Length: 132
Image 1 (cartoon, one colour):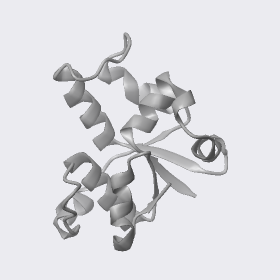
Image 2 (image 1 turned 120 degrees about the vertical axis):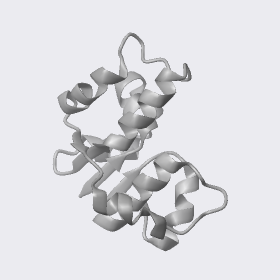
Image 3 (image 1 turned 135 degrees about the vertical axis):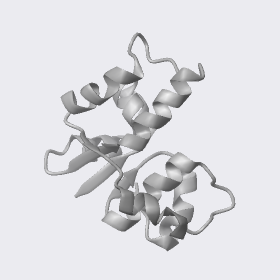
């Protein structure tokens, strides 16, 4: 299976894995699963770090792609086709986060399962999003 992790899941894997429920940890630890993070996640982290809204305990956003790779997490670059067709994702009133919406669109178009604790993602299941 192919999974994309949400930003908070990545940060919890780095700093507080006990915050991730056992089901998600089992999926993330299964060597038969392909676990990915996107360039969008790193952009979100970098923006929040630059604004002083995120502390990385001595690391810089620049260090995180290498951390992901060392953890066995593959990095996906969002391509121009997914960026250009992003406008086709229906609006969900309660969820306007542009980082999340682009990752949602990528998951729907490329048959990935999104790993997140964010309950707002379930609003996209009728549009084809698979989320755990």
